[in-house]
Length: 243
Image 1 (tube, helix red, strand yellow):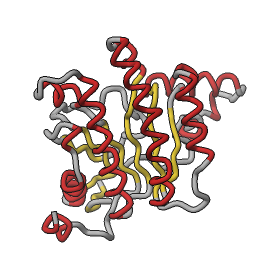
Image 2 (spheres, rainbow, N blue to C red; image 1 turned 180 degrees about the vertical axis):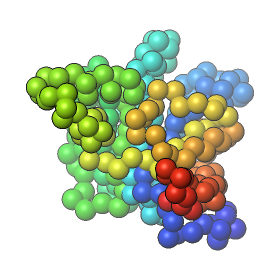
Image 3 (cartoon, rainbow, N blue to C red; image 1 turned 60 degrees about the horizontal axis):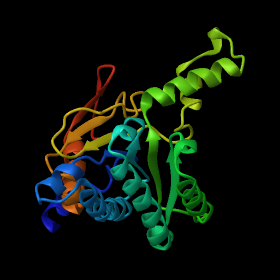
């Protein structure tokens, strides 16, 4: 781990990293356990990702925690995920405050159980005034839902077609006010973005890791950051190293 850290350029850290946390079910199945066991162990990886982000200076971290498509999973698993969310928020709130982490959410929270909404609201209300990291949980989120909602909001506002710009659309997205991710990480070896931040990831670098989410730790996060820093990023023919 120390070797990997020594390779990291701390002056070239992406401002915003987005992570698709994938592989909990397979991790559990490989151990002869049910999928819920994988989700439970995935909490340790969330904790590791947050600590690493704070340590290296990432300012914004978005975690894809529950998609709108996840409701089709077995009811027992969905219920367990919701209970786990509540428990985690209660147990981790104090530590997040101590680390200087601000919690926010994107997604249609109205569809979540009332207890989840209450725990989320309580956690958000206890956010520190000054913070090192803005941690965003994508809950009951999908990019198609987000863009559809943005279009409806623009129409409802009475905005003229001639006034609809990229900036106007961005300002109506759930992520309004947050810079777009420069790096997207997906675990478990799947090479797709699964309806996640389709608008915001337009110019992001992608890092696909074969590591299943419950095994994801600081060294894997650092590996993704180094991969990002070694990319030659191109914007309209102009190249940049890292960010």
